[in-house]
Image (cartoon, rainbow, N blue to C red):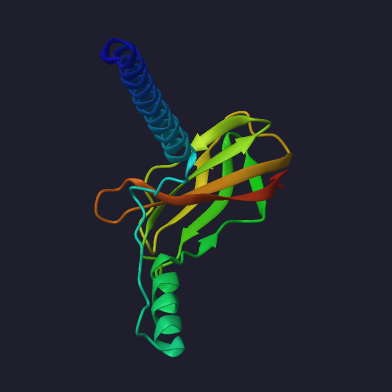
Amino acid sequence: MNDAAAPEEDASKGGKKRAALIAVLVAIALLAVGIGAWSVWKANSAKGDAGATVTSYEGMTKEEIQADLDRKANESRMTISVAAVCKIDGENVRVNVINDASNRFSQSFTLEQGGKVLYESGTIKPGETVEWCKAPGAEPGTATITVQAHDADDGKATGNPQAAQVTLVESN
């Protein structure tokens, strides 16, 4: 009778091995699917801006937070002054671009008309004015003066340029 029991024990051991192997393969497959899903989620999730500065207002009153926000806004504020009507006199245009003395930033500007840059200024420090610029090709009509702020320390452009539509007219 021992000979008849031996094949049944071998079959039972083989079935357990097969079940264990299937369980291991299913676990590996689930792990692979989980890693794949995590990778896709991570790739599609929002990424922080490496250049961003995050300020925590934890523990501050509403008044303290407002004072800090007001201070930051005032530090980045810039007054832009240009002539709304610019007179053309030959190749010269009277733009009257003023960098207000209260500004913390130097400025530069471009004068464009019909998609063509007619003039590009150098750096204009706070308190300085560019009254006239040489702009060959300027014609009566609308034009755009775009003002760009520059960092006081390194002179690099900073912030968003601001554009003003102006009217060019012939000088009398």
